[in-house]
Length: 439
Image (cartoon, rainbow, N blue to C red; front, side, top):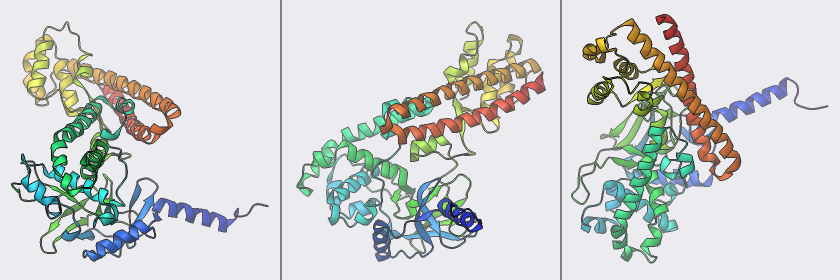
């Protein structure tokens, strides 16, 4: 006879499942014990937040007390923040101040992270470095085979991101070489491309926005970065609201919640009203059921649904280009965007309607025929994108079987594409109802 089939067993299973969904406390792990001790030495006191592993978001912070709107989630003293001031007060400072042309604040932070990581046990920042991710899932870190599966606009931005890091590495080699007196080992080995890519991703994905006054030893690029140990464990949700900023009175970076959070649940903050393509590009993750998400329609896809024999086609395209209506054309949870429908209405204008294109750009409907054609074309584009997305999802499934080493990255792209498919299916449903209403 099997045990745990009765009421007690059911309760135990429910309790286990709830614990798993709420999060598994990780504060007993040595790296977090050392991090909390290190933060305490720098003036950070917190008894309500615990590092934990969560089912949906991975590593994050759990609250041990219920939070109400207006409560401070975290207050991190200035001494805990890693900024360009930290870099200049280190052994790198003199070299940075003397180097011409001046390095960017971003490169200064990247250099510091690489140098401190290389220092190992000797680094005063070791407790923080030990909890940083070893690898990242930003598009810059993805293999070409995976990048090719991204939607076209994101694919282009991913390639730009890769190229930007490569150019930063190439242009920084002379600066890295100038640091040789500080190291016994060759700077070529320490400041290699992999190290710079890791440091760049650390700064790009984990810094908070904090404006600093310009210093002549840095280039004119904005100095707006601060790495915030422990605070950077807070994960994103598009459905919460927070206020954040540096408190001049307490000399701490603080986050206040505008939402409630139950005891033992994950504390979430909002990184901004970003769609999934932006989240993946900037932070290396995708948010499920993201209300800000949309599927982009490129100008090439848009124009292939309109005959090149249309004598006014060139003029229509020129109008859309001049008024910035060939960019940011999207399908969202509420159907085709106003910008997309406006572009379609202009392209659908009959010869006798062409003169009223200005009114169409302002939101007027020129005729029932024009509106019907615009909606029908939107439905065709939506159907095309759905079929394309389904095809890519099949390719991902095949690659996951053949390339086990790419699975974590493929899972991420699969999630993005699956979210896109849900949006397109919703848009198709809305367009179907709109088309029925115009016939």
